[in-house]
Length: 440
Image (tube, rainbow, N blue to C red; front, side, top):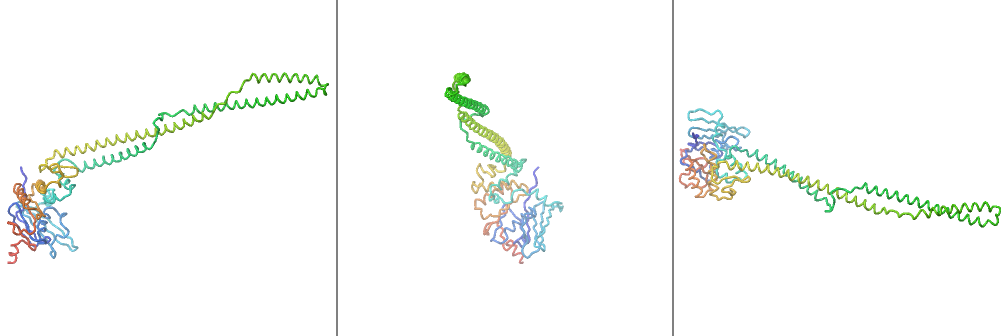
């Protein structure tokens, strides 16, 4: 069962902005409101919009200058909408809304009732063509039922921000790893310095022993020299010390025997061994320490590279999450039934036949915008075109054809089209013809 639709059967507007008092019973699908600038054409379209859309859309000074009250009444056939506005002492205004059916029964929540009738897209299809791509995208989202764009965008941003942090950390770790310079021939494991140090200590002890033995031999050699001197002196005194010859000869014999023993001992001792060159051992230790420092830097680099690789894997997982969200969004959009053939979604923009909406021709944009606005207002079949003067002859023809085929009532504001057949001319806040009646 189809829902009831509404058009304006009669419009009455008093003291709204530049309007004094107008009453219009439109005929046909296109209602052109024309006249000079400042005559009240925009005020008339504002009357329709404010009556239906709610207080938050009404401008700060909606009441005609010098008047205290304003009223708009829309007869929509089976419903009558009346919005009144009253000026307050502080310059603000209050507003009341009454919605009643043709039997006189009033709605308890009139604005809620109108909101159920009024679509989410603007009444003005030209306004859609002038929106930036992001706002057009947001407007079109209402046709993708059951998909929460905001929640998906929030989840996508969370994953995107996480991936950004991970990629930044990966980049930092990689840079740190690249900053650790290590020769290619550096081994993976450090050299055992303890064994080399032990060799050094053993060589030192060996050399100390040699030095001790050398000093002992030198001392012994000195003793031999002293004894030989004593023998020479003793022989020189033999003649004068005949009485001591016997004793001295015994002493000489003993000394000679001792000398012989010591000489034999020296002869049997053999040459001293060559000292060990500790410089070579120290050089080996220094080289081991240099290699170990390189090994430590290599391990540091390997650790940084491992962390960078892990970070890159984490970023890849986040990328998969982002791609899943994008895929889910793409599926929801693909499954949505668009009201216009060729209309679709890009990255935060509306596409028409696969290209950005603003790259389409003026006629294509107009046709699509009219169709979208009509689709978004299936019950309240009223469109307000505020810049009708921008429409050329072909665009006006297209607008009329679409209004006729979809049974919509299109209110078009234009400038200086008084000679156009059927146009309603506004002069000084009133409809031409009604001015004469008022004067009579």
